[in-house]
Image (tube, rainbow, N blue to C red; front, top):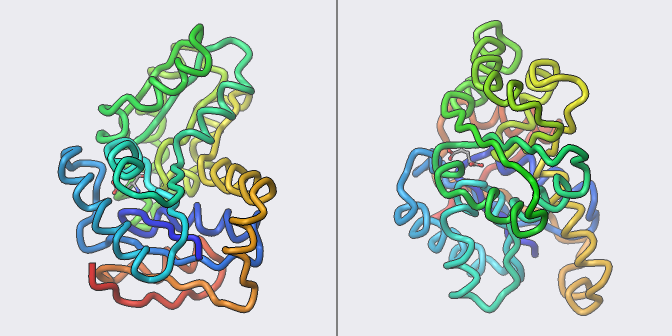
Length: 262
Ligand code: DGL
């Protein structure tokens, strides 16, 4: 199974994209809702949680791990790759690859949680791939709670999005990376406020395409993971009230959430 974890249900945008681009590969998802949000926590704490999440997924039979949380990827991907022999992929590299490929003026914006923006991993990886590019990063800490409240197209949300994007508009970016699992749900609100000509990179789609590429190339891995009869399972470490609604909205169908012992 493909193990996927996030701090909550936002990573289901990644799970949904993987389901669409890699049909027949069952998923095992963990949303660490008991300890969410990660975006406001220290790198050490996020790293510790990410190790617990990975251990849980491996115990459930995951053969590879997708870090579907930008905050966790920023803080913990190096540590996880060092500790585990399994293939570990994260949401950052595929988004960076796409952004580097589509920018024509080399001015790229990144929005994410404080943990993601402070870690600077998007910047590092963008510069490694395209040294001449200028990266403008903006932490948007209010957006995750707004999405979780379901305030996707409320007037207040539009105003806050506009305020956060204002500095990036001034920098004349032509590409914007949505560096947080929750932000794809705000795409309709973000697009007109950053400018219609700006390419918006949705990391959930990019990681799914990246995984598809890996599975197309690696037949051994493909054969290990391909099991169209096996249903995907979705675990959460706690079930606060609005979570089922948000999960249903992401998948477009009701999702059974099982309790994990993380
Ligand atoms: N999943 C987190 C991310 O992508 C956002 C939610 C949180 O702060 O835990 O950064």
